[in-house]
Image 1 (cartoon, rainbow, N blue to C red):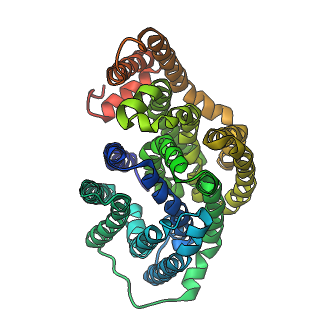
Image 2: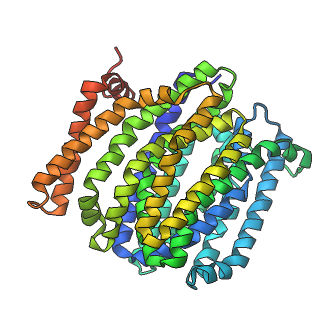
Image 3: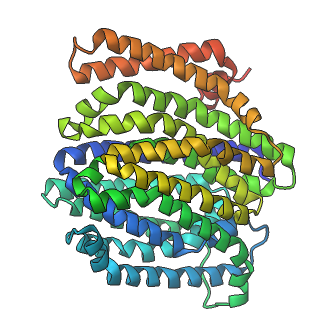
Length: 481
């Protein structure tokens, strides 16, 4: 049984890796936003929508199935490995063949070579799926953290050097391919398992019921989350998509940098606790509480400082992003918790329920995006936000029912962080009314960040002191009593 110390260590090292990579990504994107045009980011976003969709099929959910499965045999592992390699080759070939059609859809011929070059990442990542899952099952998160950080450092260095050399959009392409290549080499060096020349279809079929339901859900979820990019790229152009893509990536920062940490570490733990629901519920609530402690103030702070943040960090050419962040930032706080519920479906072996609910919910979101398109990128962002908020209760209620938990119980755990974050926002809003005309954007941003951090710490000390003490102890800033 995975013990508490292993889970805490996994969260710690995965947090170091994820935060480190996301901070690097933010800094590199800031630099690249100064070196490249919004249309360059839009071109890569167009390609990324197609690549991300095909990427769903690279393992048909077999990776998660390997983590969830209680026993693994070498015949199963080798069969899944070759199955994934076959899909990787097929995905690469399909992307190369379909690249001109994608360019025709977007009415943007420059997408074709970008898409072809980035398609290589399918084969590279397919070669790492089984090894990565085995390392996760072994809770080898220190090793994975080092690999991920190293791959990010190398790939971002390549991107920056290419941008400085005047490579334009290709600097973003090189970053994606380099990251996949470095991950492949390092994961194979870290894992002792090697595939045998064995392929048994019966072994693959044994996990297909679980994995196909998961893959089906991922298809609908991905389409709903990216149909906005399809619509904007097709009808509003690459520049508009560049603005929207930046705002969306800023919104997803807490999910990628924080929620993903807990999802990655806790899924193996949940899978082993699926027959002990009290233990499962306790672990889920503690994870949600920890995520909210960080993401709620982060996103409410971004809402408060969005104007000086965009103007000072990215430049005036990115001004349309300010309005988009007003819609996305509050939603991101909710979604940072929402994304963790997927682990419940997977751990409880109910990918079928996740698929059925996902089809309905995603069709609802897509309808809202289509309606919002007539008002441009702001209308699309508003449609996405409103549709997600309308479905929020059911997004939580359906998976929580699987572990015998009520939404009110989760809300009670999150209340303290939410209150402290709203109070922090009120302080920053009042401060902005007093100072916005007196200082430059860079100075204002620095003052707001410092004030917001101090205000949140004060309010947390007053209303959420127990959780603050736990975080300080985990960070080694306070000794356990």
